[in-house]
Length: 349
Image (cartoon, rainbow, N blue to C red; front, side, top):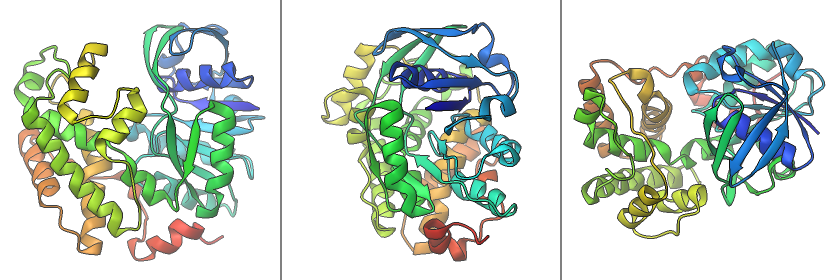
């Protein structure tokens, strides 16, 4: 198969290399162009995957998508809306689009954009990316981990098993179908972990210090993360989803044995340095707050599910950053009163 990978930070090239290692072709495109700078016709890969992966670097997105059997979108959440609007007119009828990871309820935004044109495209919502990677240089990257399995949902919901099989063919690991895309939004564990880390290390962040996330995940912050996670799990259950706990998700993502969170944090810190945030840039919190915690609060309010600690975390973070962090552009035009139907069937054509 030919896979078009849109996004060239670390996950995009890593996913492209993984797909190529399994006998597929991959085209790579960067929204701003900088991500593909230094990549000629191949990537040099080390770590959990090693070797050379031939890729087709596309200078424009239309060339990347042309002739693709599947499109993988892996851009930061603040760039996801603009990228989806840009590519919608170029998507071929019936060719799957995979969001890796899916952010907020972005699958419904893409479906609404397609519905305006009367077209159907199965949309996959991955709860986590298929690789954990870091860029070492222009054409060099290290695959830090390959998750054991990844949850995937779809719009329309019934397409999830088919898209799970597609992703397993592309990337090799097991993909577990979820009943709807809300499950993918609630399965993400990063917002919980990042909120606890930021709340406990804000002075380091503000001072621009070099600090390691897992080394600073102290027992007190682990307790905070676990309390936040308990609210996420309660919300998921209220919406009919059984999603992995924080420790289970960390195990799947990193391969570190599941254990009490402080023990896992020590093991992760010993395995590699994971730089923490530097500077009070609101964009740094977008992934965890705007497209995570704030969305969960909206969903909780609709179902009457109490999330007091999550609400307090968002309020405190907004106070410290001195700005609002809840404006989710991926929810634009979404009718929450129709959410169950939209998750099941998508928008009317």
